[in-house]
Image 1 (tube, rainbow, N blue to C red):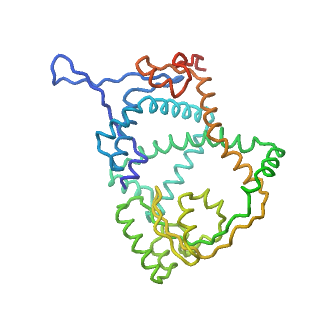
Image 2 (cartoon, rainbow, N blue to C red):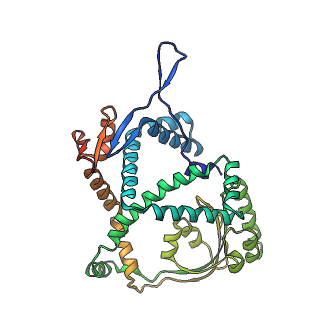
Image 3 (cartoon, one colour):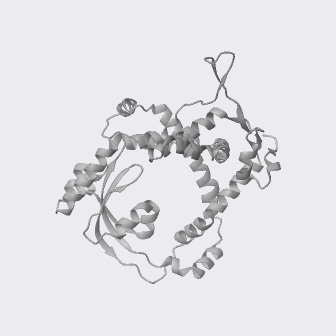
Length: 353
């Protein structure tokens, strides 16, 4: 549950204090680090983000002193990241993605509710509260996350994907045929064990036990029905069916290597993802061939992925150029290297609309 909390809950924290007349008198200081169109980024918001990153590094095994020093050295980068997040959130509002975002949030709550066998959302919310999670805080964190994802997917990935002409797509395929050999097809069954609402260490241990039993000849379908959190497991018995190597990589890149190292009929070691643990059985394999196959969707996707990082940077640069951004003089020198080539260009002065 710790990772779930760290991933979706922002801890409210203000770290700047000032001492006045008496040493025991403390006053919370907050200041505007940057103005972004009609929005502002405060020092407390920056400190919350920094504390969250420190806590994550500590959870990964670093001492708090080392984690603090590492995060402190990245303060300018963190402020630049928050400015970009603010721009994306404002763009999401402009594009009117609220209904799509709310639908995705509701879908995710319902998915967790079903995985955990709760009959109502109120039961799920109570369980979250028992774990120290405020459902409204979770909803708000997801709203920000999904809003930014929707903007980037629509304005960068989507427009790039469909921006290639048919001639460009065909020319790319002819030049890079080796990228489009007919891929390997694997037929898989799975057991998925969610972390949501559970002790993660206990889930890991149970997954190891299940793998050991399966490798001794245990009935995979029986273990899947009894342990998998997939909604349709009673109908599917854990069967996923055939999937190409390309589709597998898109769906779960972390799963590619362990599945690739598992022989037909074998069971993978537990694969840990953010949401939980996956266990796969490789039911069948069909080897890849040296025959190139033209699939327009695959070619467009390959072309897009190749330039996506540059396109995203260009998009963010355009957002900044079309916005009013004023960075506090105190923080300007540390932020400017992440946005501009020259420190003198740390302000974008186009008035907000």
